[in-house]
Amino acid sequence: MNSNAQIIEKIREMEKLIASGAILDAPDNEPERQYYFMAKLKEYVAGVKERLGRALYACTKTFGCQMNARDSEKLEGILKVIGYETTESEKADFVIYNTCTVRENANLKVYGHLGLLSNYKKKNPDMMICMCGCMMQEEHVVEKIKKSYRFVDLVFGTHNIYKFAELLYDRVSQNSMIIDIWKDTDRVVEELPIERKFSFKSGVNIMFGCNNFCSYCIVPYVRGRERSREPEDIIAEIKKLAEDGVVEIMLLGQNVNSYGKNLENPMTFAQLLKEVEKIDGIERIRFMTSHPKDLSDELIEVMAASKKICRQLHLPVQSGSSRILKIMNRHYDKEHYLKLVEKIKKAMPDISLSTDIIVGFPGETEEDFEDTMDVVRKVKYDSAFTFIYSKRSGTPAAAMEEQIPEEVVKERFDRLLAEVQSGANERTARFEGQVKKALVEDVNTQLEGYVTGRLESSMVVHFPGDSSLIGKIVDVELTEAKGFYFIGKQREI
Ligand code: 5AD
Ligand code: SF4
Image (cartoon, rainbow, N blue to C red; front, side, top):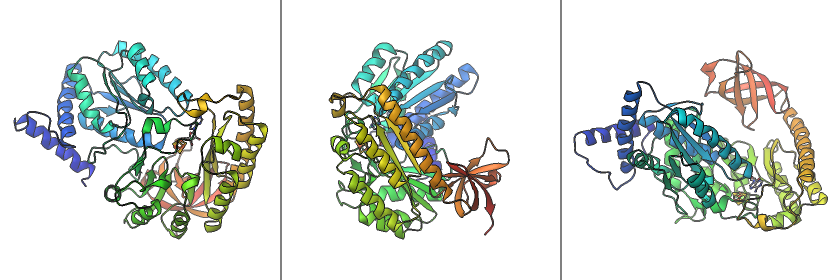
């Protein structure tokens, strides 16, 4: 596998071949085909820059999960190669929205932003607007864009992001909106440029899609069936990342615990972790998301024995009520979940657990909700992402009667949040006074002379230091627990 610099060199070679007339048309094979379109776009962007007499800026807005964040790095890699500078501002020459559709709110937010963009585009006719991600996999969304947001230039989904350069080239060659949505199977095209947000840590996709069909969730409909990447490809990618200076990786998938089941030579997630652990240079391994129904004893053993796998586990419970869990189609009950947590804590007493919880699922009674509160009290999560149930059309739960009134949900949500927060504060305090390893991520923008590091548990610590520490793992004494974070000081050991 090639490094990013080598990939960029290959794109330069492609430019030369095009300029010399040795290559006239787009090759059929990948990734060369995409290199061809990147070379063509580079020429196009250079032309626009010359006409306007200034640099061009691109803004990528990412909604949703870590998988989307990783996809955005791939899109940004291509934008950089073809000649755009990056900006945070949506008043840019190129704006791309990588959308999420897990909850209705996210969709509404995107439509709101689009309204703003149409005004920007009126002032900057060279502006390009591109929409991609999970929301685009829904037919009614694409229809709405076609009808009400005609100024959008390019729409594509989650299965074909590797084709971004080709689609963009189509857009600049024809003067009309380009829409390319694939329904299922995606091609994983390796060796495309990437612009990583952090030099020292990276996400790595190990699988795509989900087969679980939790009754509230739209993901299986938009991301398609579960597909695992070949372990050799994953290992090769991580080795390259390690050579590039990455010390921490996050293995990504909707349900990592069922990794490898559909491979030609099946392998378990725990086996994959063992292979990843052998890679020199990688010092911390994280993964998400784990489904409680598939979390194996083998995985717990491998984690407990590992020096690199972080003692941190995101284990979405969704609800504490066995009755609701059944209707959610989660395939475990309250008892199973609590037993699993007990087993994990026994093997790794210092583990940090986090979770996702949905409040107000159709038919949720006060008693069901109390079961959720009970789980929160018993498990003692370090953190919990709490969500108000959002009705997603097309999912079984959307058709269920007994949708819960808003004020009841809101009241339960506030109670849950208070419980989660007090539990988390208590949990944080357990590390106070200890010395822990922190990976320094950034200079602190609020506290002058401080940097921010992340502990194995995923909590952050702010301590005196400067930018020379970024990307390093250092020992920090956690002098003061402040709820969700720590104040500390570096220890030379
Ligand atoms: N409403 C609210 N939350 C949802 N999630 C998934 N679907 C919905 C929905 N319809 C939450 C789950 C999942 C997280 C990523 O989003 O808790 O774990
Ligand atoms: Fe959605 Fe359930 Fe799949 Fe998670 S496991 S993505 S909640 S269907």
